[in-house]
Image (cartoon, rainbow, N blue to C red; front, side):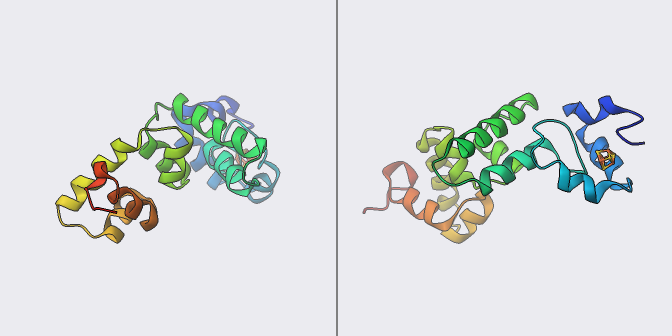
Length: 153
Ligand code: SF4
């Protein structure tokens, strides 16, 4: 099956996995990926719209409207798929968790609470960063705040 025989499949967020699989067997996949980087919707060449928007976000120059627009699209596409948490958006887009949190204006104390709980279990900062998909620096800064475990500055 290809997008020529069942085009609706390739624009149905609920069947994205099926569309990606269909692309895997398509002889046009390589050229399709190259031509689809700026497509906002649909599965093209096996890439999902969230993946492409996240790539545009990563490529865009910091503090530009292009970067803001790409992130807004990531959030919109995630929401269409029922993904609304920081961790969910970060996992779906593979954009760093702390970057997503900052851009989504999420109350840092929620992240801090999770970090504090993992510290209480005896995890190292590096292990926490790995578990939560954020940087060690982010964890370090979090644990210095009272809500992140109370390590005095
Ligand atoms: S690789 Fe491109 S042409 Fe082939 S099925 Fe997927 S979207 Fe269609």
